[in-house]
Image 1 (cartoon, helix red, strand yellow):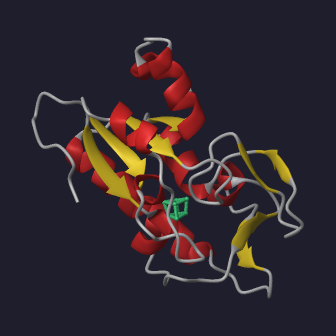
Image 2 (cartoon, helix red, strand yellow):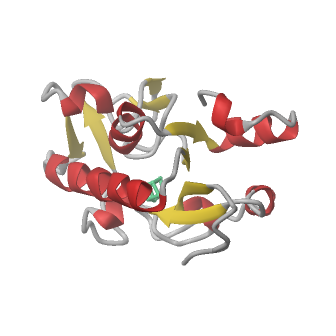
Length: 172
Ligand code: SF4
């Protein structure tokens, strides 16, 4: 789904669940009219890295274990379900496909759902499945950032827009 298609509107990758798509692990999405409204001047490229990695909806929750997304790309961390199923390959595949889409449309920015093992950019779950958060990035956020795409959490995006700041100049 492309919400706007004018070439003059800057392209931005956006977590599909933030746009209401029911692609979360539990088959739900978020209802965030304020966020949708903030995107009127942008060409929105909805992405769900986990679905792009061919994981089903619904699916068991997964967390990064042994480090964050940056560590995973260095072979030092993995993504697992609580039962210990290794989903590292699927998460990497989804991140790579998200990056391909970003490159295809020339996106320099992404607004990704905070706390997700794919999309988080500031804090993620600590791998214990106990609901605890630690500083760190998800798998897709780490790949996008290392390829020059600025990643915002949804809150930081709205904060930047509310202040009238140019989002492209802010590292969210
Ligand atoms: S946080 Fe990212 S991976 Fe998770 S459902 Fe939303 S778009 Fe998909």
